[in-house]
Image (cartoon, rainbow, N blue to C red; front, side):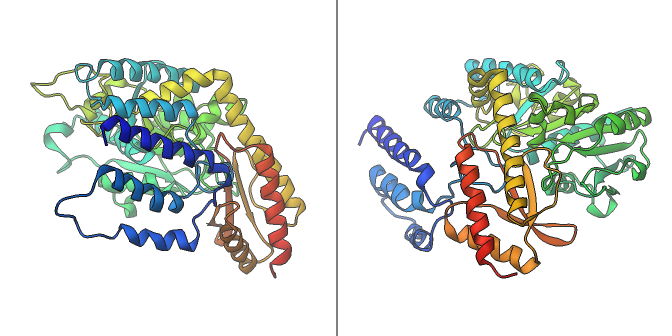
Length: 450
């Protein structure tokens, strides 16, 4: 089978998969999971034909996927690839570019530069900022926090690049009591011991309690949130960031999904966020691009470029070369699907998608409250936090929903008790999917003992 024939076969299999997305079980059944054992082979000596490998991948792999790109997935904020973003990804695969510099891929450098400009425009962030397209919010947070530490140490007269951390002035980190685990992971990888983090208590809604904010100074990194993972709440940027800036602290905002509220009629939730020094957000969440793509955004472009610098004698490049803004030197042009999504949606399309999901979340909360569920959050965004009448009923409802295959969301813990979290983030999710979810949960609750 020729290369082009093999790719055509893969495309046809992909088309069949997508055509069935809305009808698929959201989580695979026991038979599909058991069939994964067919992959358990010894490494072949001679190898199989390309067509047999692709056939095995489709026949065994496709039934064992989670239909997170479908309209009935309400688990984590995962999104679903917009058609144009997925199609641009297919073309990118054919190009097979290493998008580290303009010399390696002129088209990648050009489109990622344009995508950077459009992202800053859509999110109304400082236009002088640098944007690095990385693999995930975790990796991009690591990049931003590494840049933050280096910049704060430089202000103390410390040469981090040559002297490292041995004997360096202490850099303190203040995080929310509800900071996302990926921020903690980035801090741990950077060597900030979790025991040494300063914790800012939160109020009943999950926002940092400004009255209990730990002391800040010019050797402090303050991490804030745009979209708490359970409640969707936002820290009070307009009040907190000026306090931090007056103290000389660096402010980083984790906006993995919530930063996109800024591109919609919900932008007031983010008032003051533009005053921060750095931000992270995902494209593969609420912008609905393929996995994986996130963004490290830094107000001072030089600070991020110097921290991530990968220039070498044989490969010098400008500060906006993506290899100088992310952890990777060899990298895919992740910004191209971002460009494709933004060019196709435009400002109005981005706003419509965000606003629709927020409206649907409110509709879900109202419907489930009427069905007897306890709604635990204010539903300011696309997250609904709820529980049944007892902890055991809450757990049983989650298990029954997941076993049904008709929809999927997961459990969490809120204020020490089990809860359920519903997220709306797929472009495919329409109002009839939301109504079906409410009806399904109402039926399950009725049949589930307290």
